[in-house]
Amino acid sequence: MPGVPSGRGCDGCRAQKKKCDQSKPSCGRCTRLKLVCVGSGERRYKFKDGFPTASKKQVLVAKSAPITTGLVRINGNTVNKTVPYTPTNELSRMLSAFVDKINFSTTDYRYNLAWSFGGFLVDVPQRLGVNEALDASVAAVVVAHSDFSARKGVTAHALMKYSRALNALRKYLDDPVKANASETLGAVMILLICQQFIGGPERLWTGHCEGAAKMLKARRYYNPNDEFEAKIVLTLGGPVLFEGLLNPNIQFSPKEWKTLVQNHLNKDTHEGRFMYCLSRVPEFMQRIKAIRETGIGDSTLLDDMRTNYDALKAALSELYIQLQAVEKNMPDDSTPTTAKQARAFWAHNHLQRLYSLVLTIGIILNSVLSSIDAANAVELAIETTQWSWEIIGIAEDAVRYRPLGACCLPLALAAAWVGGMYDPALRPLVEKWIIEYENDFPVGDKVDVNPRLLFEELLQQCRLADVETPMVWTV
Image (cartoon, rainbow, N blue to C red; front, side, top):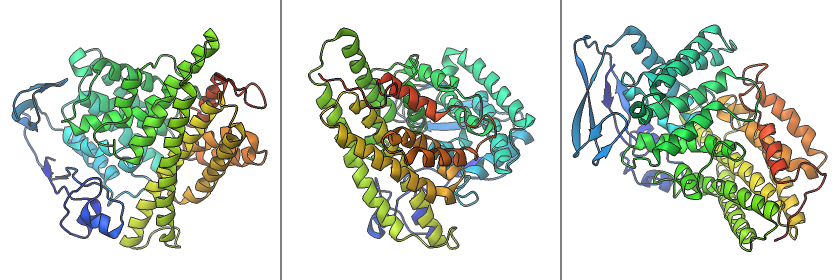
């Protein structure tokens, strides 16, 4: 099934068969109509049945500046890279199944993989058949997602595919050249997605995030001319950053953290701004730790943390206004019945997920800031309580987007559980909704990492969890 390039217009213009000017961050038509612009400038592929023989070669054409990647050295604007290709019925079936799961016209926001876990997945199909680790990870996630969607639970078939994918990834990681390929990095991210569907024991952190962090650390760069790689780095940056708040084996400099969560694709977006705010938390925690251990004050720490916190609050306010505007135009129906309603639901789900994530980050920053800012303890307590109630409201409304369209809610609810320490009525409600949303995932093991464990540990590191009221540190 060779990939045939399709248009680069945004989803809204393509749906209405209008010419898209592909402006960033929003095309002219979407700006004029005040629509959320999704997919502008992205290359898409239509897949047509083809039957190449085993003796033929698959020729991939890449255009970029001179650069060395994990698989080939590219010199000049265009090179032909010949890769042995032996098509199989299994590969064709897997490709067809995977495309169906990321296709917005066939799989809606409740189960769409690309919508829930990252736009980089749209670029995966044309890279299949080149990297065994990527192929195996896609095969694993296709089976796991199919079983999850059919509510079959964790099947032996899914576990077998997952095990094969792990073995293929290990072999590639043992090869320094293959380990640096962007496709191998994509395999790591897809296996992280797969863990959402097969579950695992409750623990503080995953092995995949730690492994991904080591790969990202070893690479020390990303190729700005390779959008697939840039998208993967951004997608991986979130899980690695959240785990890096507590996992001592994940260590990056402030500059490295910024590169992981903010690049040319998102630096001018809400996502880039609030992820950068979160990326500064490891640095702040190290400085707080140094104060405790040495007893020497840090004259700029409080100002730096307050500036970062205020920047996050500004982004939160802007996002809240956008979300309120979209909610005013939402149809009364619980599910869309027309194309126009469907677009409204997509836009609302997108902004609601973003807003819940910013609230989560806000509560984290609030918790860390509370550990040293005694003068504003009351104000900070009021804010974190208010944000926790907002997360409860989102949990009640986002039921329509379950399961995958609301898969960020367990993390947000865990943050609300932390933020609810000052309001006795909050935590019972939060715990009720945590159980409700966790039931969307494999029964028993739940998700691989228990978010509440992460936040409890974060509080302990900030010296907040061992007493009823925050312990403050003045500098």
